[in-house]
Amino acid sequence: MYDGELKCVTKRQPTKEELEQLDIAWRVVKHAKSNGIVLAKGKGTVGIGPGQVNRIMALNIAIKFAGDKAKGSVMASDAFFPFNDCVEEAHKAGITAIIQPGGSIRDEDSIKLCDEYGIAMVFTGMRHFKH
Image 1 (cartoon, rainbow, N blue to C red):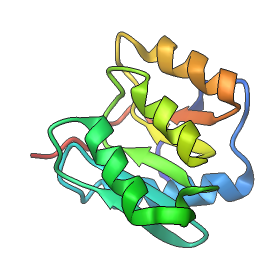
Image 2 (image 1 turned 120 degrees about the horizontal axis):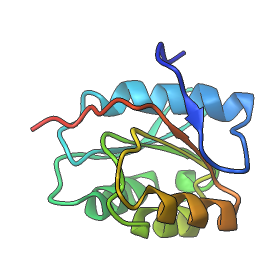
Image 3 (image 1 turned 90 degrees about the vertical axis):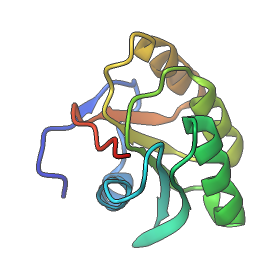
């Protein structure tokens, strides 16, 4: 499991299974070129969107590669969300939990939308952002 301390920032806590999947996604996104998004389900990745000019493009690529497997998956982002558009797209794809560093001045917008959709979100406090 992730060695640092996770902070759940939403009303819904991730399940044990989601935490295991979030750990996988977080470990993989560390190696993706930024902006990077990884979707995980079960014991592996189902979609990766690396090296895009913004986070929403990376998420859309990951969702496209995941196809039907995106539903019920979890998502890792290598850096914080500057906007809540990724939460909106995650909801549409059926993603159930998100792990990200946190630290945006707009974190509260993403947290609020996660609460509205019942998506669990945890912060790591550590960025993987890599160019």
